[in-house]
Image 1 (cartoon, rainbow, N blue to C red):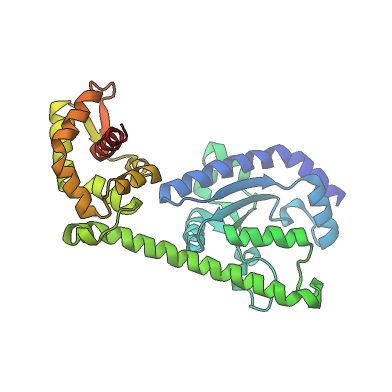
Image 2: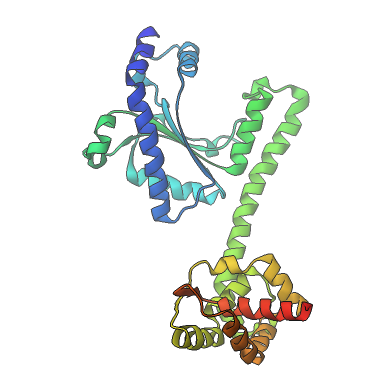
Length: 320
């Protein structure tokens, strides 16, 4: 044990630098793939934890035998994102299959949180780069799990019961039931995400063919602000040609907040058809309200801003 701890002390700076490098690398890789994680956390095992592990396992002969000295925990929002991240890690790192384990595949009668564990090394093409040269042989561990799986792990740890035979018989039934509820919740959240995604994908077509049946909500309002032909035509004419502004599509989602939707509904507008009719009916009022707030200091304006201006102007005028 002493020789392993001495080796750890000598490599501590290298391990801490690897920890920082992995944090930057993983955040960058996930961003490139458009994967938004709830949390990414890296750590170097502290000396006390390492000593306890060596004593408990009684099998390590060198520091290299301990594969989780440096660890990366990635917590996802949804269960299906685990496989997306797993694919990314398999592509970008060398995986030690013998020491990796998919705990999501544990038997249904076993205890323990369900997460994916990879032991990995950096690939040669990366360690050939100067900033990664020091980490050629160093293994590290990935833990990938959902928010709910993480909650289970934290609660389980707090309870102090990790194995099937540690749980009192009187508590087993409840323990199983809670585990099953969390697992089912993970499944339902994926279904919910899929349902919302399908709804949003179909919105432009539904709005065009049957606008009177599309209620005002965040998704439908964003689609209207971004893609309605009348909105686009008006803004190109007024913002573009008259005021010389560049119209961008970024951050339109920030416009469609609850306050704006509440104002729209208080104006008696319940669906997209009514909103379009209201927009067309009040184009002159909109031009007047825009004129009152310009000249504008910015050279750009966001797509859909005219909808925001019209609703707020009309609502404020009615309040007065």
